[in-house]
Image (cartoon, rainbow, N blue to C red):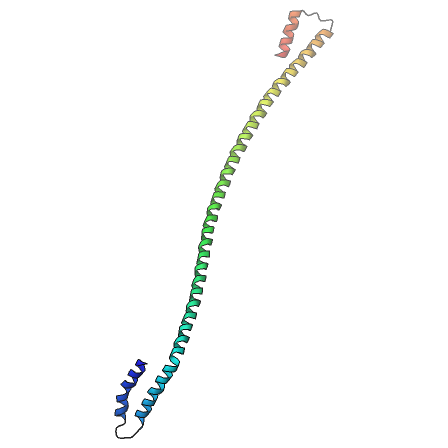
Length: 169
């Protein structure tokens, strides 16, 4: 209200000097306007202030809601980023574990294969020995049967042993 009165008082000299020589009712009109503005201010000031205060509170509450939503969204983004980092670490650990497991499986399979090859060689060598003995035994039996079945050959025991030794060797 003081601002309006100061404004009116500032314009009053301009209005007084503007009417030089001509009679106008500018002073009365200015006074009436100031009175009208003061009455309007007196009647509507509280309602206008309340309306603007309510509007300010409404805007502030909407802004707070938006800020809360923004904070919640930022928290979710941060949480998702943490989970992503954890997932990346877990993926790296899984890959490293799988690589280590593959290496250990390779080593075990190589060891198992080497062991099996050694066993097969050993079994083969033993089988050769057994088959050699069987073959020697069969040769000895065959020679002995031939010598013993032929009655026309007179061979002494020493000669028979020498013959067998020659055949076997």
